[in-house]
Length: 289
Image (cartoon, rainbow, N blue to C red; front, side, top):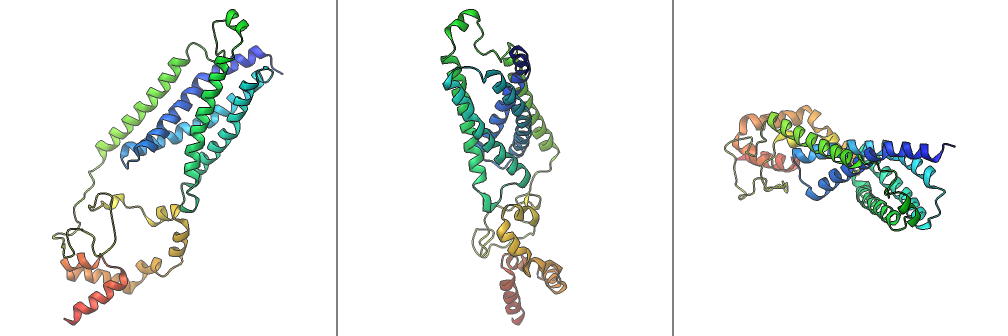
């Protein structure tokens, strides 16, 4: 078994970076949860949260091993219990985080994201409680012998924590600004002009389609069917095995849609808002006139 002073040296080398990554992961995760906005900044923050989460996994596992090996012989029950409490909580938020990273969030597993958020917050509170207990129950004899209360944290720890977190925030800002500068603005105007509002000011009536701001959506913002199925798995499997999914491959259907687009022009803006069966009925009624 390695001597205690060697374990302490190894822990001092890993502690600053580990703490910096935990804080960076917490800040990016909290920002995504609190803001809840669909913007370029949010997307890059999510990516940064993913990267710092992976880095936390790599850093925390060996740190836990070093810390427990060094402190397992200490006779302070409150510290031992509060330290052991963090382990199962860490395993829960680690497992849920990796599950979200690998499989994404699915409709039939919508409990995983709330569990990840709650377990990560509880883990942070447990770590803070462990640190408070260490400070409160620090032996008086050791206070006299040494001015250092947290032996595993060297003097450079604060610089490392600030440096890592400033670097993460700077990378998010730089990436978002560069991406925004290169991106063509999204269009919120109708793809066909003049667009008819025969069913009132709402642009999609009589369809029940809604957007977050009631305006048109740029086609680049619409996900494909694979992205939809990745979250809405059950209904996606039903749709995949249906005739509706194969409609775009049906020559008759494609011909009908193409004729509507070429010959009916403005009327096409109304027909596209209706389900396929309604469009067929509407088209037949129109031809009888």
